[in-house]
Length: 150
Image 1 (cartoon, rainbow, N blue to C red):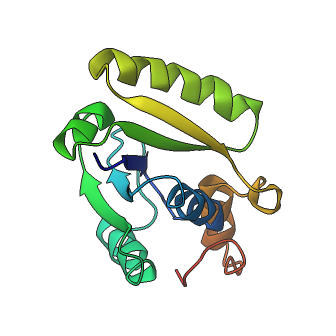
Image 2 (cartoon, helix red, strand yellow):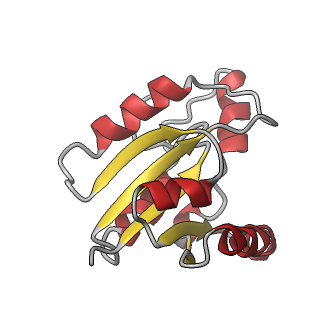
C-alpha cells in the first residue's frame, strides 16, 4: 500500500518553510499532495489558481509531489485520495498547540488518518506567510523567503 500524505494549507504564499516540509516529507512518503485549501475566514492576497500553478511548476520534476486545490474538510480530501497521513510543519510550541487540536478533529472525521509533524528547519522557523504578505504589500523584496518569484 502506498503511503500518501496530504500537506494542507492556504499557502498564501507558499514559502521556503513549506517547501522544506514538502521535500523532507517526500523522503518519508511515496507521494505528497499539497492541498491548497479554501478558508472562508481568510481573504487571499495571492490568487489560489496562480499559487497552484507556481507550486506545480516548481515541483514538476519530482513525480512524488503534486498540488491540488480543494474546498471542504481536509479529512474528507484525504479519503478521496486514499491518503492515510496528514503532513504538518511546526515552527514552535504555539504551532503545536493549534495543530494538535486540528489533528484530533481530523481523527474524529477519518479514524485512519494520522497526522505527522515535522519541525521546520531552523533557518525557516521565523518565516510565515503573514509576514511575507505584509512585506510584499509594502513593496519589500521577499525573494529570500519564497522558492519562486511572486
